[in-house]
Image 1 (cartoon, rainbow, N blue to C red):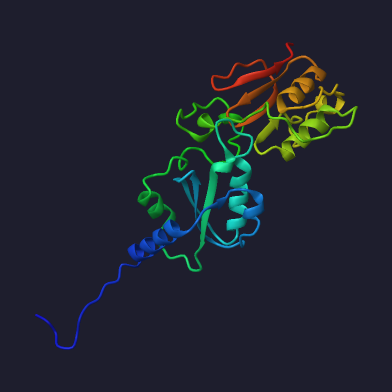
Image 2 (cartoon, rainbow, N blue to C red):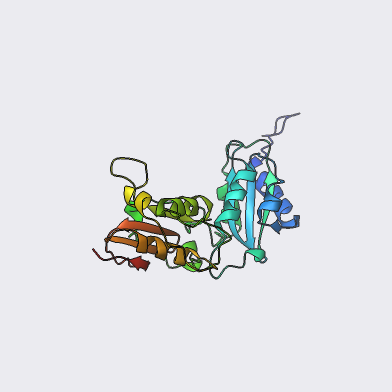
Amino acid sequence: MPIPGFVEFEFDLSDALLARLVEIFDSLPGAPLAPAGVDELPEAQGVYQLLLGDQVVYIGKTDAEAGLRNRLGRHARSIQHRTNLDTANVTFKAVRVFVFTAMDLETQLIRHYGSPAWNFSGFGSNDPGRNRDKTKLKPEGFDATYPIDIDRPLDMEFPEGSTAAQIVTRLKSELPYTLRFELREGSRRIHPDFEAAQVTLPAAPRTVRTLVEAVIQALPAGWQATALPSRVIIYREATDYLYGNVIARKPA
């Protein structure tokens, strides 16, 4: 029975926020996912989309500590040096959200846009480490679809007489994907074989393939370099990987 002068009102904050965010995203023009544009973003919390052409392929969120600029900067770097991917065709849309509520905006947006292709595909993941080098690769995953391009000419100069340690350390710091190599046992320092090996530099234009081949040639017997879909690894081994290709091997 109605109570005079009284009515109940329930506001669905979650649905209202989602609907407003969708309106904003759908009306917002995308910007190239490149350092020049990303560097202008605030280091703030929010949600974002990545688009390939006009198709939403990834939904993400970040808190203020990680920040939109940092997170999208990482994504801009991670799409570089990939085969089958035209980076000029990848754009982003970002929305700063000043107050995050208890609801999971990222999950709601992913559901609304129909589970975009790059979500849950391995895109944006950190190096999984040595124990995952032989893990089965998702055939529809980001790395399987867009494997790294180790034959891309590099804009890097190395002085004559460079050691293998100098070359792999610089590649590790400047490549937009992981280059991992064996360390000194029980230490985080590079293996001494790299420090002792002087490399004969390949002719220009140099690529990751030609530089790593030269590194293996300079190392003692027993070393191997392998290109996996998302990373290059260099270890003392003679192993054939189901989802990798040997770049160079120096038999023991």
